[in-house]
Image (cartoon, rainbow, N blue to C red; front, side):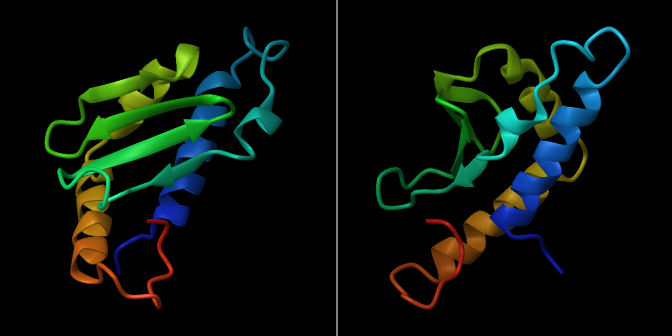
Length: 114
């Protein structure tokens, strides 16, 4: 079964913490920074397949066809997010979420973040 945006956000959170938890970064790592990490897809504002990532006060938008950033900045976390997007199934899962949101567009019962 395909993952939801919340499950993908949790996967990204774990991935970011794992990448930064080596011996050299232990002092600088603040895992609580990622507690409010969210992924959103706003089909009404932008009909092109995209995902918006929010980490702390930073926000960026990525295209789902290529994984390229189209707007915003995530600061130093951006390079890790790009690596996560380049993982084999990440864009496939995000495209699947987009398809579900597009299919259920306008329905109140949709539990995905829109």
